[in-house]
Each structure stands twice: as C-alpha cells, then as structure tokens.
Length: 141
Image (cartoon, rainbow, N blue to C red; front, side, top):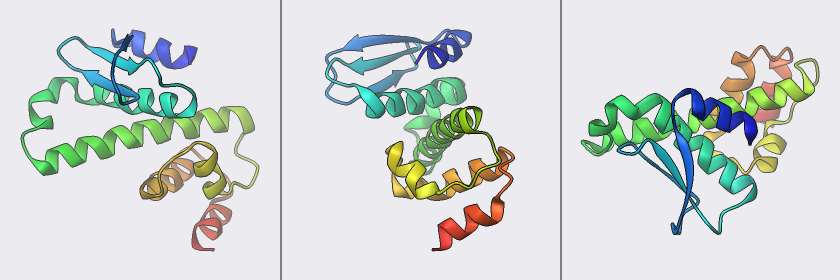
C-alpha cells in the first residue's frame, strides 16, 4: 500500500476515510480518493488502484466522465487497465519474467473480474513476459 500512496502523492491525490458503502471513490473536485470505513484487503487495494487510474489519467477530463455513455465506459476501462498494469508490474517485480504464468490463477488471486482477462494477458505480454506462448496456452485452455 505504501508504494500506491507514493504514486498518489506524486499527483497530489490523498486517501481519506468516509462513510461510503462502496470500497472507494475518486472525487476530482477535491483530488481525493475516499474509502469506505468497512473496506479492506484485496477489494480495497483494487478499488484504490482503479480510482487512482481515474485521478491520474482523467482528472483533466472530469467533464467528459458523465457526458456520454461511451466516454464513461472508456474511462472505466482505462481505470481498470491502470489497476491491472500496476498489479502485473508488482507481480513481475516479485517473481520475474522467466516463469510460466497462469493468468486465471493470477486473476483469481487478485480478484480481477473476468471481463478484464484481455487486459491481464496484454499487460503480461507488454511487460516483457518471456513465455508469451505459455500465456496464450493458458488463455485458450
């Protein structure tokens, strides 16, 4: 969590507790990520990373977020991609790129939704994962 907070500090984004029912929400007006008091663990980490994606990638485009369904979905997808890329980079820093990876185990362990499968595969390949054929076999099996 410390590394995430350091990244957020570079963008002057702070994490604040709130009475929210959802795990986390980014507020572009205050440049804060508000987290629910009852949130914890992997769910909270993923929510903070997703909201960090909004804060880092979309702060200057906040007007567009609610302007059309397409812009909203695009920004949500980009925030998910930010989260996935962060988690993949963290994994690769811990384990390297010379070992086979089962992306479904990775997704299950990190509670990444199945709709983000292609983002996970792409992130591993883009990050220089050496066993691209094994990644692909895991996806197609």
